[in-house]
Length: 121
Image 1 (spheres, helix red, strand yellow):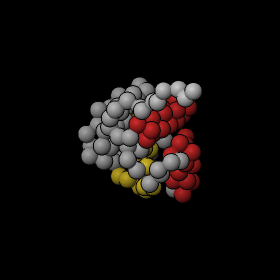
Image 2: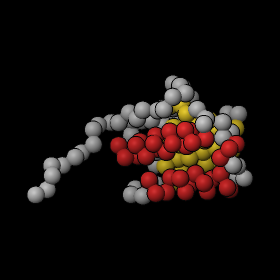
Image 3: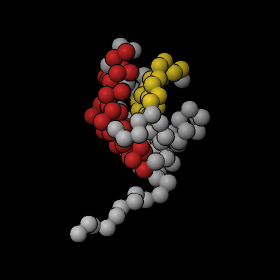
Image 4: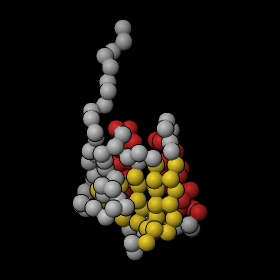
């Protein structure tokens, strides 16, 4: 089983087995993506009676996309892969099959640097 995480625009989470998508959830999280992503992954796994230990690989879309969305998706994928001791692969446009796969932590590709204002006095 493979978990696919794409947070470049909307939050798109899917479970795939042998190139066939078994189930997916697409939600538009504007402000609470970091709080809801793990909960949504758990919801998808529970709904399909899949344990985290059944996952063999995690795919994550590393961008380009929104700064916060990419950061949350890549961090979550790296965290899950590390904690489950499974490989994580960078997949740009994960449903288009244009994957550049590798089994080390994925680095995000942001559209632009974050907007950081000067310190308020």
